[in-house]
Length: 251
Ligand code: MG
Image (tube, rainbow, N blue to C red; front, side, top):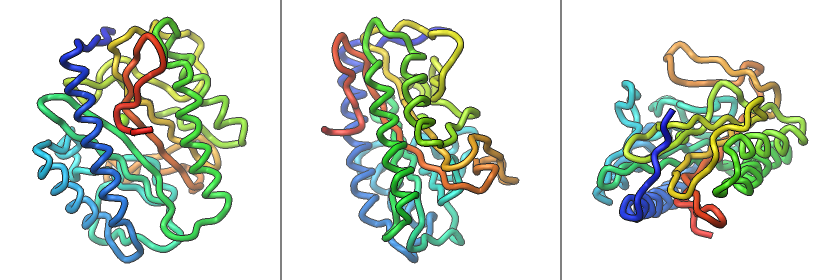
C-alpha cells in the first residue's frame, strides 16, 4: 500500500477544491425542502459544480449515474438520485458530494433534517458529526491511522449506535479513492503512521440500530439491514505537524 504525500503545490490545489466543495454543499443545502426530488437536487448541484469550473467526480464513477449520492432515512450511502424519490418533512437526507479541481479531488458528506425530526434522529446526526471530530483528534503526524478509527467507533458506540463496518473512508488526491482505507471502528493493527501531506476523507456512517448493511438491487444503494435510520458525515482533511486542516469545512 502506498499513501501519497502531497507537495505544497498539490496541497494548495486540494485546499481550493475543498473550499469549492464546501460552497457547493452550503448552496445546495438551501434547496432541500419537502416536495423536491433527489434527481432535481442532483441537477442543481451538478450545475453548481460545473459553473465553478469543476467536474463532479461521482458521475460515472464505476458507472454511478448521478453527480451526488443522495440518501434518505435508512439509506446509508450511494443513493442514486431519482425523480420518484421525493423529499418529505421529517426525513433525514444524506448529501455526499465530490468534485475535481485542476485534477485534484475533494469529497465531503453532510446529513440534514428536513423540517422537524424526532429527538432520536437529531441525536444520531449530532453524534455522527461529533464522531468525526473525535476521530480527527488523532489525525496528526506521529499518530497512527487506526487511532482515528478507534476514536470514531468508541464515541458512536457509547451511544448504542451501530458503526457501519462494510464501508470505509479513504485517502484522496489525484484519485477519488486512494490508499489507505480508513475504517470507523477499532482495528487489531494500529495502521500506518500519519505524515504531513497525507490527505484523507474521513467519513463515519452510523446507524441508529445494528451496524449491518445491505445492497439494493440497483447494486449501488446501501441500506441498513434492520431498517433503522443512518447518518453520514465526511470531510477531506490534511495531515500536518500540528492540528489537521479540514479542507472541506471552514471553522
Ligand atoms: Mg468519501
